[in-house]
Length: 85
Length: 223
Image 1 (tube, chains in turn red, orange):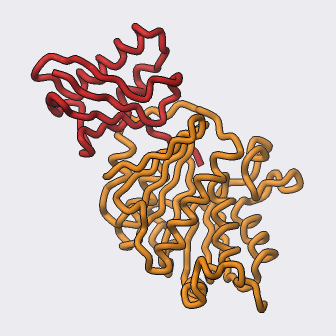
Image 2: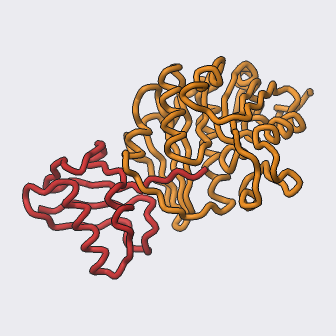
Image 3: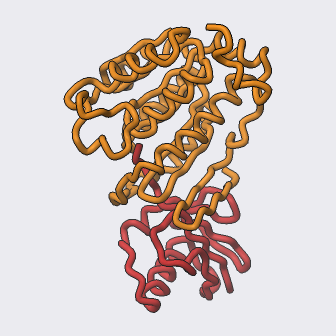
């Protein structure tokens, strides 16, 4: 199945705003995050694992937890927390 | 002072300007975001403001904090905010609180406020503020920055939005804070605050605005 991943406010190079990922049926949000890390590594983009894995995730505009399922055609938004003031 | 609010109009009606003068806003945090927010709200004519910050200025604040001046290093941020507001707009009743907001003092510090603005700089304090606002049934205009990025949302009391935005183990790497980021974020927070105070619908209620200043992309996400 395919899911569209959108990265929000991550300090990624231009062209990494979103990515389409191929995942096995039965995948959950955490699998999406692992696949993102693999993709970034393949493209030689450095990202702190914890930064991605502790980010806020929404699937189709709904808050999601790491164990929540994803389905074909879902849009997964990953939002990096920021707290500066 | 006659004419002080003349240039607010017709963007705001005379009636809306009068409404603002009856309102009480609490700005929590008088640093990067807070300095610009206090300036915006004082100049537009919010009648009463409480400004809260237990911190003092240090040299690293000079790059972005509107209230920070070389001569003020080591002085209380909230007191500097109150002094500046008094110089800008003597119509504003301003109260400076030189302590940090906690679960223990929060209800007392927010007493009488119509609206609260989050200009804090760490997750724990933001969670505390949201909890106190929920308890007091107050709307919260949230803003946060990091490097070239900013986020803004309007939090309805008890909606739990900040707990979702900041998962329990959230890691927030230091991305720096250049001068332009807090100015922009505070402008949007100030805009939403004025809308709410005037009884207009907030564009960011149950929506999160995410800003990437590298690409100038502004995205609104439904919450």
